[in-house]
Image (tube, rainbow, N blue to C red; front, side, top):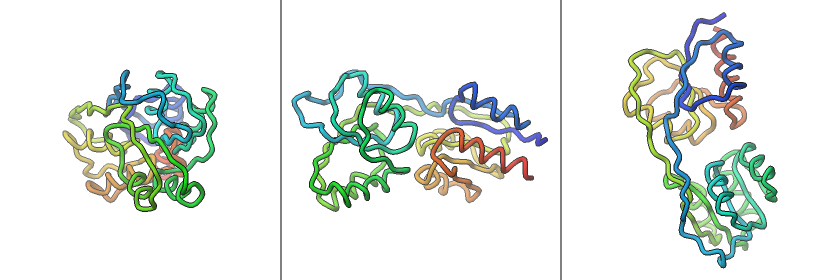
Length: 221
């Protein structure tokens, strides 16, 4: 069994922690970012929101609290899709990242108008692709991301990352040095590439798959 210790930049659930404990890996977890769901975002119920884009579960949570009525959802990630469907929402399209979703929309829904519920640090790829192809899009900021900066005075063999903002928060007071970075998707990997070449991307954009990649890597060493 490996004696390596990992750091997760997201607090893990009990089943997720058990994946690591059962592998013999040590770990530390914390939240590199804090999410603030906005109670009163700039939205009028009379506006057309037949077709809504979600690229994160945080946006879904904020909108569900507001009890806005939505016809069709277009989303990124299986966990976002699951949360929407568990709350009675109809998901028309799903993609593994925002760029892929934008391409689907351009190809199949070019003449449709969309609302994009997102965070204050949302990525630019999706809006820019839709704008380039003249797809009507209105954005609503429904949550804010705040960095939870923490300095670790020790070395971790592996660090798990789940968002670009999580990378930025961690790197504010820490370095990756010889650590292996495991990340949830390509957008997070793009941010990591500013700091390291030691990157492994999950096969699926889930927390569990990030953990599985880390377990596989260290138990093969």
